[in-house]
Amino acid sequence: MSAPDYTDMQLDAMRELANIGSGQAATALASMLGKEVELSVPRALALPLADAVDAVGPAEKTVSSVVLPIFGEIDALVLLLFPTEDAATLCSMLGVEAGTEVGDSAIGEIGNILGTSYINALASMAGLAIEPKPPHVVTDMLGAIVASLLSQTVGETDSALVLDTGLAVAGVQCELSFLLLPTTGGIAELLGRLGVGS
Amino acid sequence: MGELAVSTLAEDELMTIGLGSCIGVAVVDRAKSVAALAHVMLPDASAVPNAPAGKFADTAIPALIEQSERVGARRVRLEAVLVGGAQMFEVGVGSTLDIGARNAVAVREALARARIPVRAQETGGRRGRTMRVHVGAMTVTVKEAGGREVELWSGSPSPRRSAEAIHR
Image (cartoon, rainbow over all chains, first blue to last red; front, side):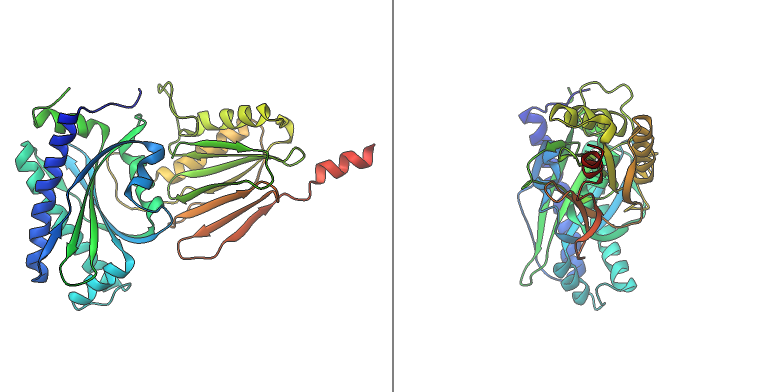
């Protein structure tokens, strides 16, 4: 099976999905922190595997991440990536210390709340019955995190679809990227539900 | 991910940054200063024609051998070094848990089938790793996130080449 090609219309539909999902997540983060949260224009990237990690960020950079697996009518992974300093900023805003068990648990909870808002928006937009599994927090090299997750989602295909949005908390150095990595079967199902299936 | 590279140039460094569950497989012929490196993502390629050469363990090893031989390596002299195969996450989608351990098993089996000895390995655990193969020095180094670069294997100077010289 070779890499699937997506039409511009399909990529637009995926971008719109990411836009609405991350919009919900930004609202949830803003109300949790009591601060304004800015949202970047989402990207829908269909990439050969060789380029997928580099498109997300520098592979060797140490980052904090939260992974939220989604299962149900589609399988996917929601991934939140924070520069480690920004994760520490986030922890201090919540009154916990970064790098501790409590800090990791706070980051996991943020991931849980944001990820759940994202997938709720996605579920209602695409008419899907999906549920998240508990979040998992890992701090490591960006490349190792993203590649390990893509190994789980791409299967036989040689390309990856990555939906990527940046969130930034106003007034402090705190940015995070929000990624949806659908499985190959999940992408086809999503496109079908959005009325742009192939 | 899924890539494969080969070099005979002393100044070259083959590397794969941020190996998580993936495995970096280096195959070298010290006597000919040939080094090849594949980035294996998944254990087996059954029913997947035309996949990238390095993506699956069972196809990556034959591809490493072929490409090394093409630039002058002798199959009988090939030796391997493995890095990666961590289990970074306890969660996942579907039945894909612990791909890292399955990758490591599949790579070792494929190397055993090809009769290539594994000279050094650092696999498993929970941490991501960066692997570098220094072609000129014939060394393999490993670095974890935030850690120091450590030499995992040194294949230089070539013992086989000096043994051959003595026989003559």
